[in-house]
Amino acid sequence: MEYFTLFISAVVVNNFVLTRFLGLCIFFGVSKNLNASVGMGMAVTSVMTLSSMLAWLVYHFILAPFGLTFLTTVVFVLLIASFVQLLEIIIKKQAPALYNMWGIYLLLIATNCIVLSVPLLNAESNYNFLKSIVFAIGSGAGFALAIILMASLREKLRLADVPKPLEGLGIAFILAGMLALSFLGFSGMIAL
Amino acid sequence: MKELWNIYKKGIIDENPIFVLALSLCPALAVTSTALNAMTMGLTVLFVITANNTVVSITRKVVNPKVRVPVYITSIATIVTLVQLLLQAYAPTLYKALGIYLALVVVFAIILARAEVFAAKNKVIPSFFDGLGMGSGFLVAMLSIGIIRELFGMGSIFGIKVLGAWYNPALIMILPAGGFILIGYMVGGVKVWNAYREKVRVKRGEA
Image (cartoon, rainbow over all chains, first blue to last red; front, side, top):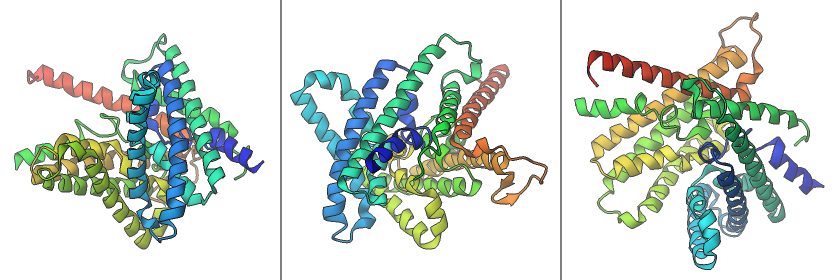
């Protein structure tokens, strides 16, 4: 039950994009296109889950025992960036079809706040291994949900008559505001 | 001298990191619910970007281009950790308020972008001023968003009550949704203003 609550809270109540403002660069950059958004959502979820597993191991077996927690930021950034590079090389070699679909997103994810923030939050809240995985999957699912909703809305928006200065980024922000407003309805659903 | 001033100036207006380049948006929304938090974040980024530009520029001839990105990231992460430890020691309440976003300064696109685009190709002094200008532009944008949100959301600026008791705070402004909507309109506003300046320039025959 505890795990289920954690998952739901990461997906809707504390949605990473709409209430924590993480991953906004890719959120606004990629959501112009629905197919790309689906790909991005899946790529972020899988990279986030794998990298937070890795980061958990490094944090609890290397950083914490040796009293090096002040190096967390530096270590996590380098860990994730190199892990994503490695993942890219492996996928390119082993599954070229997958690489053609996702390869471009992997590079964008390498140094991104949303992927870095999950391991940092895990370390901060002292989650156990299983909890960190649940939290990472939930956060990824929340990101995917937000970006797919946004992309569907923006595809509709293409036919709308938008005031000229607000075209592009301006209206996208306002739209995200409306989405955030509706996600506000979930707050208070789970007390954490 | 004039040249350095121009390098400094372009970061504030023509290439404002938030409103024009639309980079590093996460902090622009996350920590601007009060003016004080916005200012701290702005100053942190100003410091990190200037320091990193200087470091990258000094080491530009030693670093092999193939490994430049990891080197930049390490340098940024080190500087950010420095700021984290300083704030934790001397301003614990601010450190708490900024929370995870402080650590996330490491992955701000604007810092890496300035290192790659400017500092890696230029001498130390211009790089320093470029960092200062971009950082100031970031600070100005953060401050203006923070002041507007705090004024409308709580009726105060920097924690000092400005609007009297008659004012009924619009809570939405300090909530995430208000931040998104405000930035949307501000991006539109900056666009209108830039278009107007362009028009004036064309009229004068400068373009």
